[in-house]
Image 1: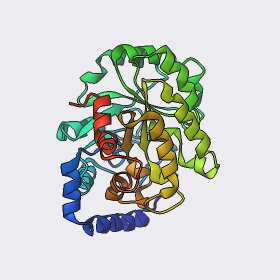
Image 2: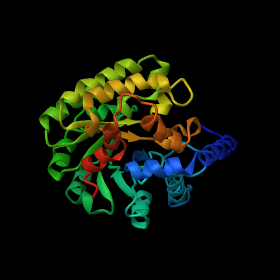
Image 3: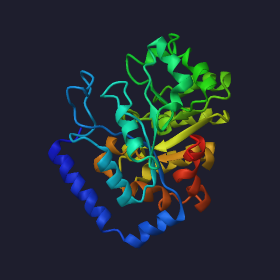
Length: 309
């Protein structure tokens, strides 16, 4: 985790990187295609009525507020972003909804749901009535949440979400294959695999290629799609992160441009690249993407998937 001093230093460096890039180039990028970030976290400072979950800490030492996100999006030429509420404030979506209310054309929300509470399923039929709410995001990555995939806790959710026509983003690194049966049993349920189904911890364990293989295996289900997001965090190299290009290509080749969504998860690897570099990694450094492919991956596909009009 970045210290406050490291954060401020990296913030200054990121700003300098943006400032030194030609404004004409950024403007041309915006003119050419819509840019939509498929995942960002927003949070405000902890307070008496906005406490962190005990034991959880934010990804950065300074809050990543609505104002900061809008400023960085404007500098980098990002038109829209999908807010995934972070874990440390608990199962709450209020700050994300506030962002939509303030910037209704810039943000949408994949909200958090207390899956362990059976009563939460009663919320799903009217879920989209909340401002900017377009779906649900579930996490299965720790000792508490992983068992929900096999102990019946999640079983009640899938048909309810399918009935409510709610897309579901899933973060379950190393457990991607568990969703094959879900996709098959609920063919009208849109399942979106976060971060190519892998995480930085798998890089350290030399299991990244195996995780990518699991994600590729689910491409046979037409209701499964994937966020080719957070790739800088998977790299052992500096920008343009060439060591992850082969993994992105494997996923893209399996899912195609209309089921692959660019995203940053910016605050989880903040110091590794500027916002603009996270865009150009895809638009300038991945030779296997055609201009049409980039139109879909960089924004058109996620907008279509979430029915963001």
